Length: 362
Ligand code: PHB
Image (cartoon, rainbow, N blue to C red; front, side, top):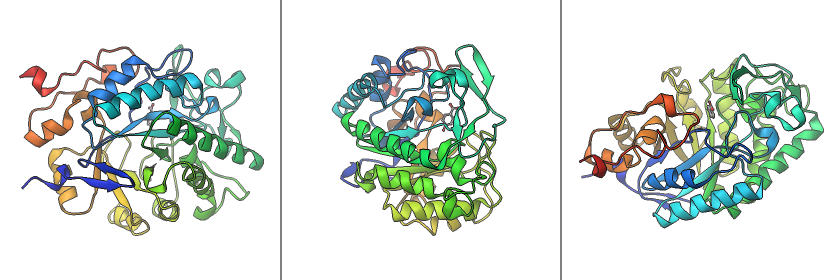
């Protein structure tokens, strides 16, 4: 019998034909002026339409939410139109696609911000981290702390972005609460030193997340909304004094919101799968929905994890960059193309839409 990895899963109104998910992947190929997806994006995502689900690259909800050059947005008419072309084409090819909603918070640079203002964050603590701007790599700028009264404006930006995602034809959205970006900055106590309602205990630090989830689940059915966490990653200079306590509450927020799935970066973003013993089970105890695992899974690990019932969906990043027909290759246990990290970020079709399918190489 075929492994369960290749069997369908219901998610809200959707039936995913398999449990192999294309992970959100920043590729920095949006238009230089308008941060809009274009024809190349349509080709790239359509080539990968056999995924059980495609999650788009991280997409900023507002100009302020931007932290790198040429990442796409979902706030302008041009961006919505560009994404609509992408989703129409993915749907025509038989696929399903969620948009990942992103606000980078402090991981930005004044040159990328409206009127060259400081990026915003829960607290005015600069990250020891770099971003990519028009002149190349640069240290991120020192952020300013958001006023309590400003948080509602950002929640409204998330809601508007969800409405735009709906207008652009997405089947759902994933709220990016991982990898040291704005929501993660609120969640963890290394970056959140606030003394208002949004800082303090894990409950208070997760209030911003809860408000965002409440807003976007008024736009999409909760089961067609996911959230991504990376509790054990220090990427983007993140730290927390008690990740299990912090993210147990974040998981409970996902439960309360009735979300379709939680997407977990198991270990270091783009690095080792180092997780304290028992920590994932402790987190899962707070959430009863679909569990999507990510980080350095290979075919056999994914088959075993889904077969055991520990994992419902597995998201693949670099393997999907290099193998548009990853599902087919996994099904046949066929050889895989190797990803070329030189073309991950920025550039053109090379390393983006020119990886061959099995059919093209045999
Ligand atoms: C990146 O551009 O390096 C990046 C973007 C989004 C992530 C992680 C990394 O979640």
